[in-house]
Length: 229
Ligand SMILES: C[S@@+](CC[C@H](N)C(=O)[O-])C[C@H]1O[C@@H](n2cnc3c(N)ncnc32)[C@H](O)[C@@H]1O
Image 1 (cartoon, rainbow, N blue to C red):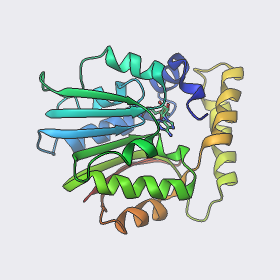
Image 2 (spheres, helix red, strand yellow; image 1 turned 135 degrees about the vertical axis):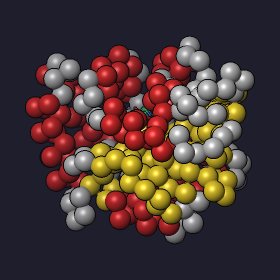
Image 3 (spheres, rainbow, N blue to C red; image 1 turned 30 degrees about the vertical axis):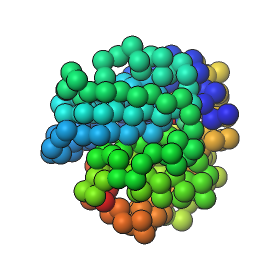
Image 4 (cartoon, rainbow, N blue to C red; image 1 turned 120 degrees about the vertical axis):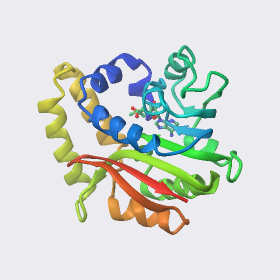
């Protein structure tokens, strides 16, 4: 199951705090973009984990309702111990322990002003990801934002070539993990990660009426994209 590595959250937390996946840069870029978005916001967070990223990127945003979805009970327990994301003390928070695709299908059309997906949608193979994006477009309100942070492939690059590149990075640069832990990541990524080229990511959403507004961050592995409906 793709949530296995995230059961004990400590390892992933160590990797993100060491900034091996460029959370500092992507969160800063998303936070700055969200500062331009008036609230109150109804927020859906797909693969929310322990809520640390949502707390950071929404710190200055007026959030009226927050729904977080994740398969990892342990991560959601940590989430529940934090204040609800956003600057409103009255925000409601609902945490759903379940699959992103199955949960999305149950959520109302037009029910959210902002959908966040941070490093979670690459877990879906291409055809299932297309369905998830279709439902994401459906649950966004007109004018709503979709902020998608994830790994991505270069145009024309195969999944295997991408993985080979990322494995070199994990094995040589992820020094906050022990060599054994780095191999756990390599094995997890090799089994579960299905990054797409930017043209596919933007094209799929455009076909659903959700247009790319801005590339908030991009390096050789990671991207943060802001879409609007
Ligand atoms: C790499 S972590 C990302 C956490 C956080 N959003 C971030 O940006 O750092 C991926 C999260 O997605 C969750 N996840 C993976 N596949 C999922 C699925 N099909 N449905 C729900 N959650 C899933 C994992 O449990 C994990 O918490």
